[in-house]
Image 1 (cartoon, rainbow, N blue to C red):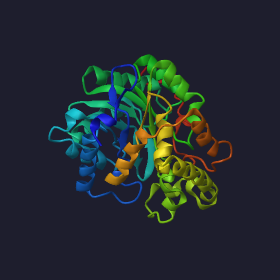
Image 2: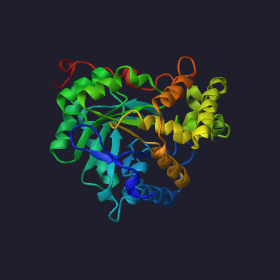
Image 3: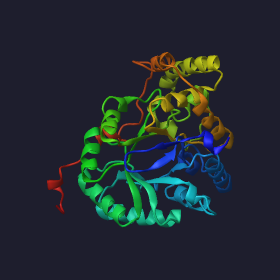
Image 4: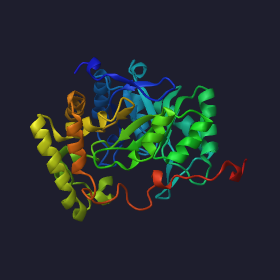
Length: 344
């Protein structure tokens, strides 16, 4: 598909322009089973860029570190100039335990390390991957602001941040994008977070817009997961919940058949229809799936079809939380006041 078919959107109010659909790179580094062959993933990334999907999303946590190294290799040979690259900091594995850190010294060290792994002089969009509830958000954003002034990053983003955290951060330095989980069956951000972003002119990046693969082939996706697949720990995919949730997929699949598209294209089109300030970043490790995802941009939905789709997963249509207990999300992202900070 020609690059022009993908289209471009403005993300946020500070000047960042990205492809209307991005590419999430998490699965390339593992998490959904073993890491994939490096040359295959480089070929996929370069195919994406040539197809017009130039907004690439990674994190130092993916691997950890190996996904950024992969992106660094894939962006050689003139590819970098065509790409809007987003990476993240803030989640660390300490002795097998996941921790979140927003300390200024850690922010700076993480940025420097990511630049080296990516083989870049500047990161286009740098997210705080999760919010450190021990450090005032003003302190973390203050350090990111310095990195912008030094030319090491262009734009600042937040991931899984509450509305109040977003407001406080935006008051220190304009936030360009908030990354959050948004799909037909993950809509908890619609009540307060998304309206806050729109009020402040902040772009919205929707991760897992296909429900971590659920809207690709429903419960069949999860019948033969490897033991190291991250999804095996998620409540929504436990057998007792999946048996109920598969009804949602069956309804989406029926509607997709009527419209002459795949269920994943239909679910992805629903996210695209949320507005021109929304960029979904479906992840994949296969070129054929990537090509199918691009096809979602051609699926048109009427208001009546949007409402019908939403009805499938409304109320108690979905069972199980997005994450297991203890995993940081926007619901647990409040930070102390700046006056409480040890260095204030």
